[in-house]
Image (tube, rainbow, N blue to C red; front, side, top):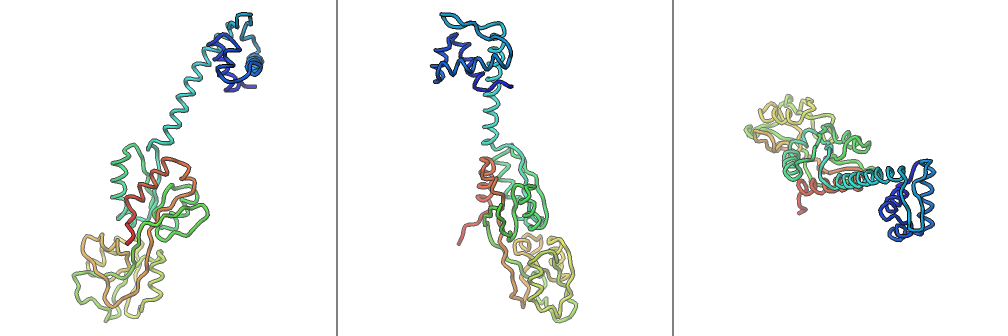
Length: 288
């Protein structure tokens, strides 16, 4: 049997006062309860801890040793308790944020700049994949936060809407007469994205030669050089070093919604809550 935390605390008070009644009174318990606690400790250590007399109690050699070590233990416990509380409120520790590489380009520079400035002790690990895979990793507790496009609702997820984007066809701004009059106009797209799949279903592909790339930034650079048109989110198109413009003779679009996602568990952490609010504050656009 191990000594209880309360029994040690009671014994320290007895060691301080040398009186069972006074110690019990100061701790707000009855004297019988105090006596029982001392008996339990004596049973645990299999030795006498107190010598009782009419004037109070005296500590045996074993009692003095227990009092000394118990005081040290209580001091260390209080420090441990304070450290744990501080760890739950101070913005320190390691968190992970997941998002598609293209989403990262127009969100993370501003976000990480703000977070590093405000919380320099915070460590952030970044994970990049398709939005649906990032969502799966958040659900599976592999990633703390996700910045994902059109997340599928899940019972364990909290979803915060941040802003809208629009996916459509783009072309180089330098080519004023870019058209689909021939059958060899290249249309670049990422076939892994549901937005590309949706647009390909409604577009007239008669004059397009569809070619694939799984990197939206590569598609944007190819489009900027006039090699072909491309299916791109507007925010990715606008990040291109060379200006792009919407493809002429096309009205097909897909509206995207960028969301911050995390598990419900995050709400039990003060640090997680603060980090969530900061991400929303930096990235969320005011509703019009």
